[in-house]
Amino acid sequence: MNKILILSLMTINLLANDIPVDLVKKHKFARSIDVNAKIIQLSNAKQSVMSLLDGHIEKYFVKAGDKVVKNQPIALIDSISLSDMTSRYLSLKKQFISLNKNFKATKTLYKKGLTSLQELNRQKAQIDDMLSKINTLKSQLKTLKIDPTNLKTPVSEYILYAHSDGIVSEILQPLHSVITQQTKIINIAKEQSFYLKSFVPLKYAPVIKKAKKALLHYIDKDIPTQIEQILPNVDEKTQRIVLLSSIQEKIDDLFVGAYVPATIYLTPNREYLGVKSSALSFFNNEWVVFVPKNSHEEQNDHSEHEKHDHDEHKHENEESDHDEHEEEIGYEPKVVKILESDGKFVAVEGLSEGEKYVSDKAYFVKSMLLKSSLGGHGH
Image (cartoon, rainbow, N blue to C red; front, side):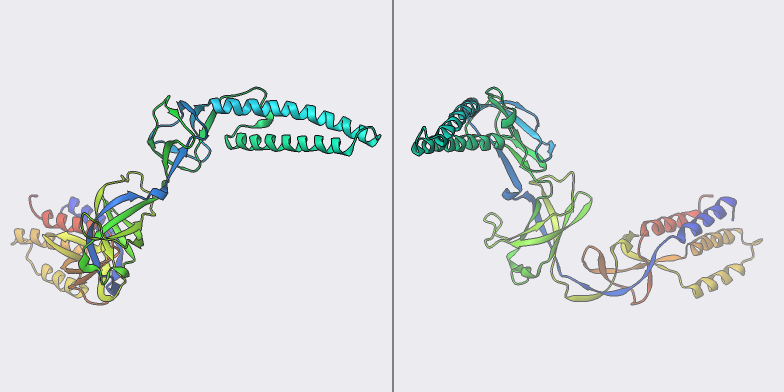
């Protein structure tokens, strides 16, 4: 055995110590249904920012696709209605100052018996009515996020703000559009409001109510979703039962409207011997699980290799080195038949309960075996 091969074996032994091993155990598996699905966003997950007054759009502070936070400026609106409102507010404040001054003077005269109680009450009613009008305008201005206490002259512009965090999904009105009160300006979508709309064949109607979760297969990810609702009516186009499940994991590159495959899992009701999904590997055109080699067999194989005459059988010695290389790895593939899967565990035939198996890093064991099969040739 040359130095390179020895070094390779030492590296393999070192890394092999980090390979996790588990025991084959019984697990309850849910029946699964593979379906077509669509990524959607429910209408109540969208929020429309609306104009509060008639006017026209002077400026946008955001564009479609931007992330926004609550109270972030969205658009600048110019409104004649606001100009009239602020003019009335300032005028009423001046009138109130004058009325209040007269009321105080009348109150002094009343105490001296120089005016009637009726006149005092009349002026008090005027003040109360004036205050009511001022407070109404003040409330409207605060709704527009305009501070009345800082208002010195009439203004015509106000800013629309986002009411919650989210993403600008659509600009509904072009810049400089003339708008009326309650015109929808922008749609903001909540970031965590995506749903999976799964289409289930009618033949599964008797069991579909047992469904608890659906696994979304998106690009190179398996994303768990929680089933929220089974719609009462079938989809008209596909004539299939519709399940809605919430996507709770945050995914930056999720596209609304995309059609994707999904797997729906029913309540667990079958028990099988199972291994972790990470243990499966496709090796020599078959599904396998890697298991530690039997130590007794390894010892017998080692004894047979020692019987070779290295001086007379050089080629056999090279093959012995190759076999020793394989033995140093300490794992072998076992062909299995896949029965069920719940995303985390896989039910298999071909293994025994309590048998040890490589539960993760199967790709590394596979790589070691492939290198081992080539190690004794071409040197």
